[in-house]
Length: 230
Image 1 (cartoon, helix red, strand yellow):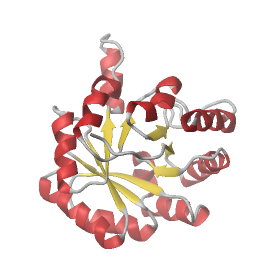
Image 2 (cartoon, helix red, strand yellow):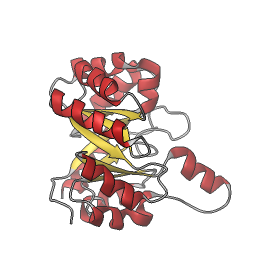
Image 3 (cartoon, rainbow, N blue to C red):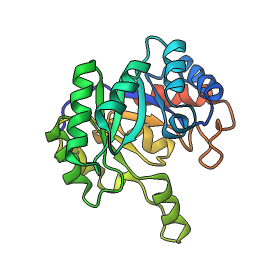
């Protein structure tokens, strides 16, 4: 059974430049969000510079580096830790030795590792296996291309909710559900046993342009955060 963990609200910075990532991160921090995530587009575009910029601007906030590591686990995790990341992400589809290497690196550097089950045929078994290998959190993930392709093919909506309960009950470490959740779904995540709540596309980031979502973002984030912590 899953362990207890207080709700954590995380902003997913799905941007391709540091300036916009910092601008949105500031809004998120002012709205009371807990963790900042240097998402994959930001890492591809800016790499370690993006993580360093976030660490400089927000010295007290946890920073998740969404590396989606598939190989070279120790080096990638260590580089991000040196840049200021407090959490890194390794993929369940990676070789077992890669997952072990990332776990060694984060233990050596005093940070945490999140295991991502994106694209696994059996996400329940993959999540259990990552826990056995020593990851600290599970990212239960329905991918951007996966869910958009599913919808484009006229097959309806795909989300991590389908097998979330089974994943939560399969592990004893905190779970984060990721993949196009609506506002109401995101707010309900702690009650579903997934206390690490990510706010990204489409709530805070335009899901197609990878720019900050239109509207009063601070008010939206403040309201989401308030409701999650109720």
